[in-house]
Image (tube, rainbow, N blue to C red; front, side, top):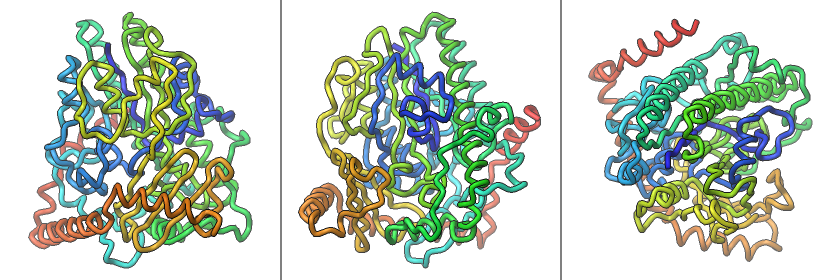
Length: 497
């Protein structure tokens, strides 16, 4: 068996055909859903790029591996999917973004193709400004507004901003080249083709956007005076994302229409790229021997509730697509309702290639749901966010259709996703739901130690800030700039333009 793992960034499953969206165009994903298994309720375990991906490839919670934010170094001491796939006889390769932070850019994978398109490719104290101090007052992301809320507002600055598109061009080119080479040799492979799309800033070529221009789209227009901020975590993150600065403009119908037209166009283009990967495998006669898996690291609020980016625990932010297809061996056209998470990928991939997964992984193999009618074991799915923008450890627990949110020392919430899919009513404030709130809180606190996690987070923030300040004072920050990366990206742009 080969495995083609297609990784996306900020792909909201609700805006794709397999998850019932009627507005966009995702024919390739639709076809994969018909010939495979769709997991209806899949969650990331930390709604931020680097923590989510480190958690996914290790199969462990971010508080266990110390990857709490976008600037924590990801330790080489944890076994990963890459190590396991190599042990199973597949060459494990990543093409494109994986957001590993630190010296180790392989983590058990044999190659990193298109590494120059990734954000973090080395040890770099400049990233430590993202180790946002919980001990400071809330304010906008100190990195700047570049990819925060202002990038969700239409302006001349975004009329031609093809950075992510061009990065994905290179990732796609190298993925196709790798698959061409491997299908000729017949050697088994595990390729993670990892794209930036549809991550903001929002830009796509006109021909990809044209099908959605002027079309009625599900724009989340707030009613006059409507306030859907539910507590301290929302307020902290809105401030961090620079939302107050552009709130009125963000919520204008023409701006939301532009944003959604562009987002749908980016998803349409992503679907086109996936089609080209599958077409190559089919032409080489190996598609029936290749398991195709599609996932994302998290979603995006995309203006819903007047919010942007990820980091929140709302469905728009933490839900992820998860589709598996291998028609010769697995179910076709099947849908699995039970809750799963990205932690389940490690044990599932191990089962697929006949390798034993580490015994202490918290996830479970989904192979029984792929080969038979078994639903995943009923369990609680946990999420964490202890990164930049907040001021305390933040947790989520999903059990069936109940979602519990706990911000240590500040707030707790409970939502019934069946009765309230838009997460508008906080049942933790209702006496009728007090027993369920207490039960969920007790269960979560038995799983995690918020005091210890909070102390570790603050200690790491202080240490990294000290390194940054020392490096800045000595003038050493400049020596961490890898100019070859920027030259390479510049060459990509020049070639494309």
